[in-house]
Amino acid sequence: METLQEAYRMAARNNGAPGIDGVTFDAIQESGEESFLKQIRDELVTQTYRPMRARKKEIPKDGGKKVRVLSIPAIRDRVVQGALKLILEPIFEADFQSGSYGYRPKRTAHQAVNRVAQAIVESKTRIIDIDLRAYFDNVQHYLLLEKVARRVQDDEVMHLLKMMLKATGEKGVPQGGVISPLLSNLYLTEVDRMLEKAIATTRRGEYTNVQYARFADDLVILIDAHPRNDWLVKAVERRLREELAKLRVEINEEKSRMVDLAKGECFSFLGFEYRRIRSRNRVWRPYYAPKLKKRTALFAKLREVFRRNVSQPVGKVIGIINPILRGWVNYFQIGDSSRCFSMVKRWVEKKVRRHLMRARGRKGMGWKRWSREWLYETLGLFNDYRVRRPWFPKADPAPHVT
Image 1: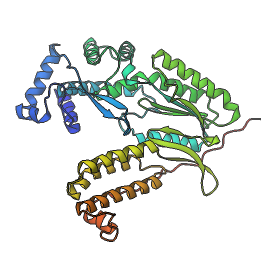
Image 2: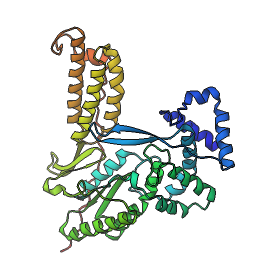
Image 3: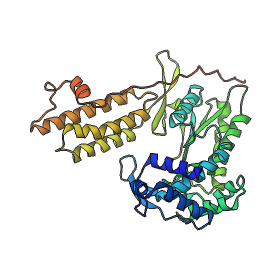
Image 4: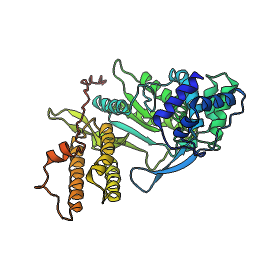
């Protein structure tokens, strides 16, 4: 019961929309949380629990025409998934590798982004940029259950997990399921192990020739620039394809590519675009900032807010856009985002000024009518566009062999 109570608290903190049964958290609180959890526990104990079909919802990807399909489980199923996650996560965390960052305790996307930047500092400038085609939709249930069964010898738990998976279809883990991130990480752990082995076996003293970072299905591999490692690029790519083939994970060849930062090329990872530039001291360093697609998606989202609220008071509009801006800036506040932030700040300020002028039936931006201080201090428009720059140690030079 304690596990179910904690799982319910986690689900309630995230709130979220109701599932296919339409039951909300408010309705559960009205009828009684304790009786709700007792019913779930009784169903689990008597093995009469059956997960409901998840409600499907399409959300736009990066502000474009493509959509991502989210599966929204009923609250009762979210609680059961959360309870199972609380039990299984500590078991599999012991197996997960250092380069895996997605949806793990005390690990963040910022750490993964900085790990890639650090590898560039260390002259790992040849990039294997792999895109997995519809990864979450193509996870093979029988392979996933085999991986779980290696560590979990409990028939009831395995039966429960199998029911959860089959409720979503013949294959795949649903994006939106509470336990899905844990399962998707587990599925790719063998890929991580292969890359860790590549790092260990090609190490030259303290210097490594390979590095990688993975956040869920977003994977990038970085390899040392020295010509003696030409073979390593092909060897790592071949082994990667072998491991993915075992999992029946398809590579999107159109989006996957080899990148050489030393030739002025660039690549994207977790919404940042990476390239290599010279610092003021004429030393090569990584440059990474929000990719254009992410900025365009932000503008599209904000533009829609202004369009829908064209006749509303400016205070209401600012109340809607501030959380959007805060979330976006908090995510991209590392690296070299300052120039992008300045552009976003100017764009938002112009939109707010135009909204104010339209409300008065006037054209223009009202530059003389309203000062910047008034917009930010009196109206309370978001203004915290600070960038946190990571500190990188100097890279030890790679040992050169003649």
